Image (cartoon, rainbow, N blue to C red; front, side, top):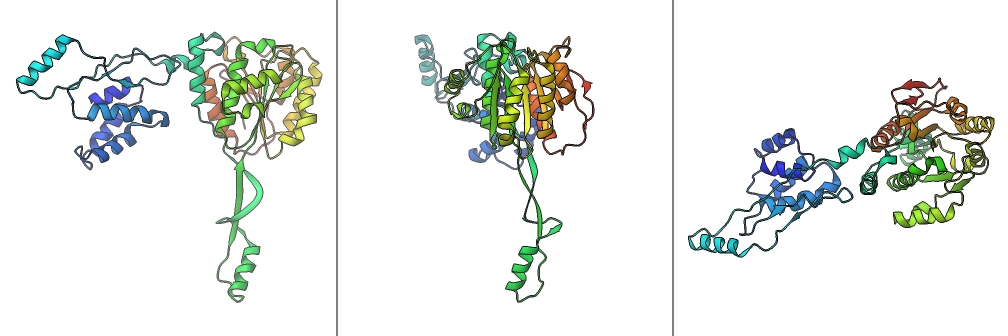
Length: 396
């Protein structure tokens, strides 16, 4: 029980149910066999990959034989921008404490009990989940970037037109002929084929105009993390008064270096907003190259457009016809008072499949879950967008 409290203080999600499972597992695993006990406890108590090093260090220090020196857990040094805290050894004790240990050893007590002091703290992650990106402090901004880097994205698979050998319902006539020739013309097997699946492409078109300045840098972090976590290629574009492709710049291993290259490559940073002109450039110059194979398009913008609404309406319609799913992410949608009344949003709404917020970590997690549900669904005829909570979702 004390070990479970220690892990919870370190930030590992160890609830009473998992501790009960560990106690029941002790009916089959001996605590005296350290290796078996270690792997049993780790498999039942740890459910996140980034928690494994912390668990290992805590296990070694907690379950080892006391060596006469105290070991404490220092949680006061934890900062939001850092990963969860680690166990550290204490500084050298004072002379009085040394004399006490020496006298205890002379009395025959050769071992002193190892002490672990735990200071409870609040969960920084829970506080940051609902905090708007535009109101973050410098320390909170660093913590949010680290949490965004830990997010796992999965867009699922799409069914292609190609088939492969398997256990499907369609007969594989080519393999049937080859096998029958091998067996002298006898029909001994009836091979079949099944559909082949591949990851669905993702296109990100992000607004970096002046009205989006408070969200731009974090949304570029989001784009970079999304491109790194997905197995398929992610095409990334940004726009203000014109469209710029930044896919190559975001391929670097170092995030800061990648963002520096993006800043040097984009020449209309924090300028005006011409969504219609930018989408026209995308449709005519990049559409055929990147929109094949049922791509999903994430369009990130607040909808403040200084261009022609009719041009925006026409280009949104063209983009919607050529992609599998068109999702508009609006950071202003996180506010309960927001209404899409601008000319740009009024022109775009009829051609949007999903209208979702992207203003905090919770909205990004909701987006990740939503993408898993829409990737495998074929595109039926459109229905009008309906209001659902804080987001507009086109029901299928």
